[in-house]
Length: 142
Image 1 (spheres, helix red, strand yellow):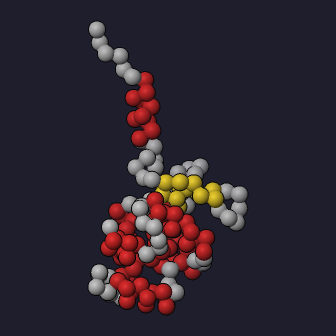
Image 2 (cartoon, helix red, strand yellow):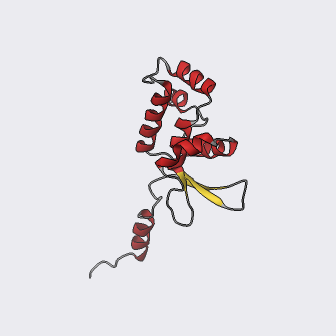
Image 3 (cartoon, one colour):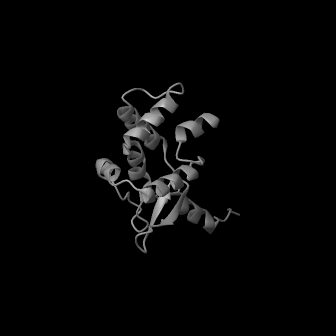
């Protein structure tokens, strides 16, 4: 007698093929409207882009030895380009599952940076297992 196929196996396959199945993610309300966005954890390519933007703003390669000095310098410059580069990659439209922003939007997002963007980014870092918006320092601890 042939084994019967489990009908749930097909459903599981479909679930695992959904656009965000490979990422931890959650819906977050947009405080200025009644809408929500999906924030997903950053992937490896997102971290590489963030690192490249961080180094471009810092004007030097960021390492364990100089990360504190670079972080202070970028904070003084009030340049949110590295954060914006990460944010544009992790905000997803819950209806289409497409990114809300493209990489070309980084400068616009950085120029309009505010606390709401920071909260969205913190949510992405938390999904990645980081508990603050200082991923370089947090990564050293892990």
